[in-house]
Length: 353
Image (cartoon, rainbow, N blue to C red):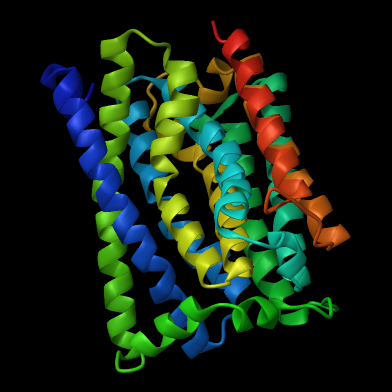
């Protein structure tokens, strides 16, 4: 059952809805980064944690809307592939931001071990997700046992990452202050919020989150309708079209963060979003009336999860190497991620049923 079938509107109206909602999400996501940067500065919670929990959680709202509507309407394939597709696409956005906006390798300007911890936790979640798809799921209290376990792991991962930020035993000599010193955008954003109270910043953040939720829901439903009206498969469309659509908040927030020199926040956004995305498999199960959603997944979905894992691992290598080697104004890790993503998409195209 679907609350509103966008396919009845026709192809052109859905394309217009998709484009309009995308603009709204982009603008809200761009402002969101500035608000959360100011909140992190006022409260002292740190860029990495603000990016992982706050920015990552808010920019995941379109995934929540997409998963809820897709599962409720019985399209479990679109729901699962939207989630797993978003993971790989979110990591790719770091590489694209590095290529378009940066002069130095993004990973060379990140100095806190908290980001490494977030990346490891994200890799582990994706490995568990691939294991769950291959091994199959069993129902427990109306949801899948694996989906429930993955959700519990993600809650634990957020707790561990937040606690680690307070006790991180080391950091590199070159830290986020280097990036900030080179960024005039960061200073401009901070000065524009000097007269805004913390309560005002929270209010603006909440409004931006609401826009992202509403427009993100429209994006997901229009993308689903476009896949139906064009005759394309829900699996591949869910991975690419709807995955990119629901990742638009990350596009705008990562772009703004990189321009401001807030690289810790940019990667924290990606790792936090991806952790929450894996946890949302439980939401898909809760709204889907059939068997556990992971039982409807197969090699296509497992490869999608592993693609996200590999891309995350590439940036983890870059963080550990911490070298500022670039090619065409992007770090070597960013270049590798773009090439791997391209190869992965080709493989997924041939794996779709």
